[in-house]
Image (tube, rainbow, N blue to C red):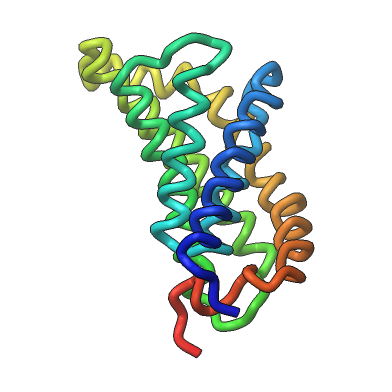
Length: 186
């Protein structure tokens, strides 16, 4: 089934709203979030650039209205790009596979890489914002390791358990995993 541009924009809006809402829903629980998974799923189902747009929009909305306060421009940009990458990554994973299902090991690795990238670039954003030296940046990475580990492990587990269940459910709908949405050739 081919989606019209309006249908695709509608799905992008729904995924953006879902990612933003998930950010707020799990904000009270440190290092546990489903935003990365939501943006990744958007990329898988809608395509590379659509996944990027969903990731940027959902994270920007969450960050602008975060219960923890405004992030500051460098961190806001890094957060938006990090979540945009999760959407791109979802689209690329889908394009690289010929079958309609994605192996669970690939999903786990995707969660690990997407979260590692997000944590790295958001930490990197402190360099210009705080005027940190490379030595101070490396120190902040070191002190953040326990938090990164929890975040990476929890997202990897989410990608191993929740993402396959969601993709399995969503592929029952006509728009899901269509070749037109993922840019693969018939």
